[in-house]
Amino acid sequence: MEYDVNNIREFFKTDAFAAKLGITIDRASDDEVICSMEITPQHFNAGGAVQGGAIFTLADLTFAVHSNLQLAAGQSDVGMTVGQSCSISFLKSPTGSSMTARSACLSRGRNISVFRISVYDEGGTLCAEMFGNGFTKAKR
Image 1 (cartoon, rainbow, N blue to C red):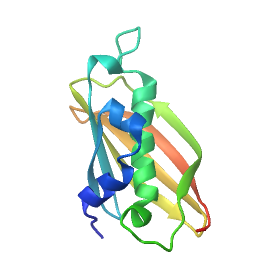
Image 2 (cartoon, one colour):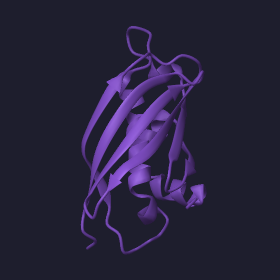
Image 3 (tube, one colour):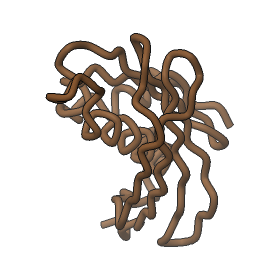
Image 4 (tube, rainbow, N blue to C red):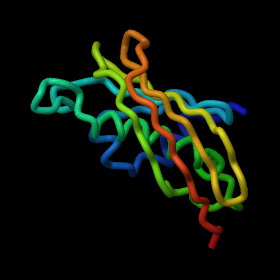
């Protein structure tokens, strides 16, 4: 199912840290969420490469969006999914002026879910791979 990305953006507009980094939600479906970020001088570390925290935050927001699509779309009978654990491997420093993260749901149970988030640079090179385990809290 494809979701109205404007509704999803509205739900996540209060994620101030991701907004400050310039992350945008580009596409949201049950199969895949795509988020992107323009690379600006604020994203570089002392060595001149894109800061790992910026890459991780792009992957983390993509994970958050994908694991909370139904809630963000207004489905009131589901609880919020939070990150239980995440691991990321940085494979290559991104080049170009933007990065894109794409998520895939590997497993979704009643409370536990697992997602893979791949981060690519502007040229399409895989730069990082993150696995996120989500825990869905009971609806109160």
